[in-house]
Length: 168
Image 1 (spheres, rainbow, N blue to C red):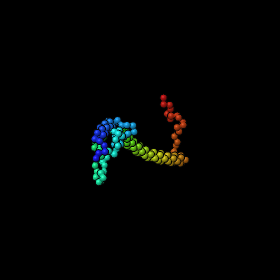
Image 2 (image 1 turned 120 degrees about the horizontal axis):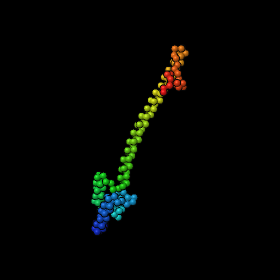
Image 3 (image 1 turned 90 degrees about the horizontal axis):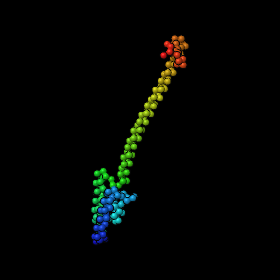
Image 4 (image 1 turned 120 degrees about the vertical axis):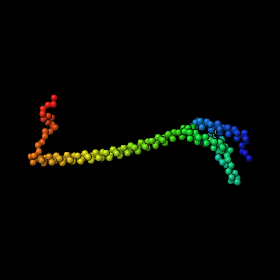
């Protein structure tokens, strides 16, 4: 026994189809999503009509608008598979997820580059320290050899005179 008249059911189905078409074109109400809850609110019907009902004996029967809910979800999935997203928030979420993945890749690449630069810096400082130590050792050897009298010092850079005269 139906709780609503056939005329009311037909009118509600027409309202649901009109709301479904609007929503799938991307015309969503403020704060609404592209889902059954918003579809029911836009059509002015209760959301429970889109889900199966239970009889008193425990068997299930389809809800009065369940076929329209399934059609809505099927059409929405087809649009999404085609690359169209009627819900701008869903499109924004997907765009932001892609951007986050890209940024994570960039951060990982930067971290790798920083580790390589840190290793290079450590090697460069170690080499400079070894070179400084070698220069200090060689200067010590030169000083010892100079005391022995068998090493002659070259003129220093502070002299600023060319050994053969001016270059001009």
